[in-house]
Amino acid sequence: MCYFDVSISDIVEFDGETHCICKTCFKKYLEVNVNEGKVFTLQCPHCAKKLSYNFLKQMMDSFTLDKFKSFLKSGLTNADPLMRWCPNSKCRIPVILPKKFKRKAECAACKAVLCTECNREYHKGSCNAIFDVEIQRWENHKDIQKCSFCKTIITKNEGCNHMTW
Figure 1 (cartoon, rainbow, N blue to C red):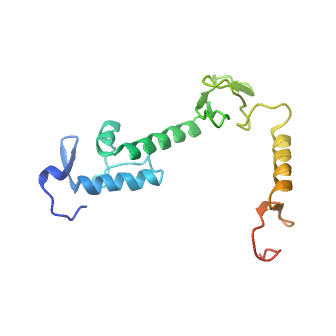
Figure 2: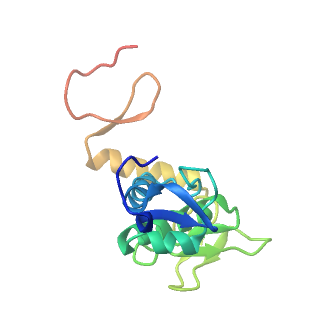
Figure 3: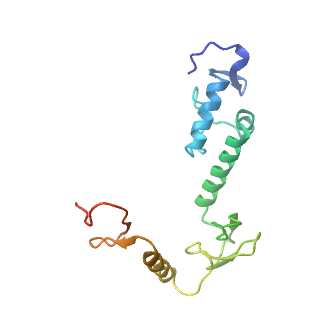
């Protein structure tokens, strides 16, 4: 993996095994993968072993570790059907829903109330109706329009007034 001449103390070692990659290259490998959001598939590039959290903490700088934790938290929250993000932009912590949850849930941290169907602040009425009102408001204030053919919302920013297929 690593083709630099380095001392044996600079070679990565974990689980009692030495791996053919230096610490500098390994740290760069971790940094690139974390920056790409690949936190659930991190493995040793030499032998494909899973990497423990304690080992990752030793190998990552604080910025990369914080980013790793953020991606991990985000991925776990998004994958769990009993978790939602708090709709309060100043809070944004996961809200854990009870097993038999209703349409309305409350953030334990900031007490914001959210709609569990659309993950916005709680509202009465259908989520689609609320979404349509938001889109209409957005269309009226931005350079936004619906495609006349497929009705997809598009941003008109430059060029001709038609799309070709």
